Image (cartoon, rainbow, N blue to C red):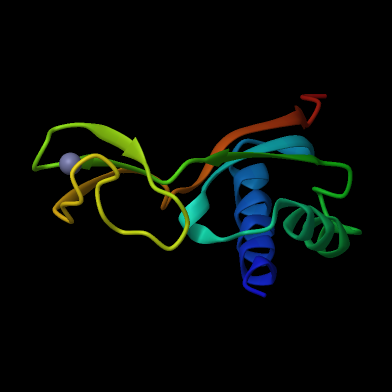
Length: 118
Ligand SMILES: [Zn+2]
């Protein structure tokens, strides 16, 4: 269940980011996660909300965008989405592939309320 580690790191990151950007509250977070990561979005949201209780991100909406496992074939020069547990080009069967997406774990966007100046 590595969602727990991801949720914890995300929360640590948000607390740092909030300090840096002078936010009093995080309202929403958008994550981009490659399917290779095998993260279950519902599990991650649940764990995040549990861990975030009593923190600056308590009311944050966690949006998760899953990115397909996509490769570029160096043999036939085509781009394709890989089916689960397959590592060869669906067009020509070659396994000299370049990653286009699928391994990401990116914090794409954070929205928060700034601390009032006065
Ligand atoms: Zn190919």
